[in-house]
Length: 216
Picture 1 (tube, rainbow, N blue to C red):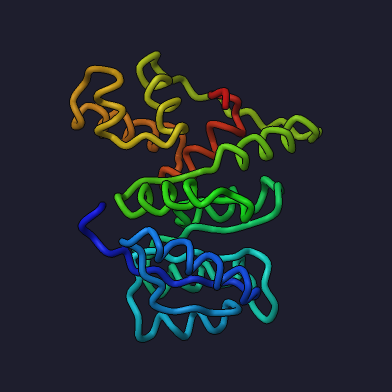
Picture 2: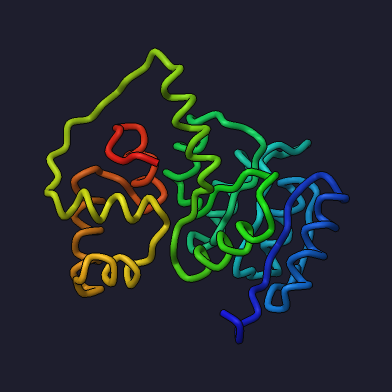
């Protein structure tokens, strides 16, 4: 990571927030804000001429918010790596965003170290959920009358892998933790996606939380 510059588009309607985030990230050295947008429409237009490594996308914006912009952006570029920024704890739209291919989820009051960790993780093909956000989702679930548990039979090893995925570990890190090969981890991950009918890792994490398969 130290030798690679990560090009980022920052999408947020508050200029003060954008300026602060840009200053903090670029002071670290290997992050570059290549463009900024104050709403979803401006962001979508930028994608016609830019190919960022990472997009930091606010949920709540005027004209077009992040909920509307994310699927349009992923339609233009299915490989786009989007990290959603939010001040909310509403579990339902995180589920929807993960289902369409959003890779990361951060609360806007996260420390810069966590923002850096999220960017690095997603850049390296991972998925990132802030622990504060996961706790917020769990709290929302506990206070909800809905309890849509889906019965899926997982092996003990699959449960172990699932738990480590939910902690944000990469395939290599999981392999080291469980003393198995990266290829074996990839096989377990593929089996988990198939069994749970999830499209991607972010959806798998949401499924695990909703079905109380892991403790955060």
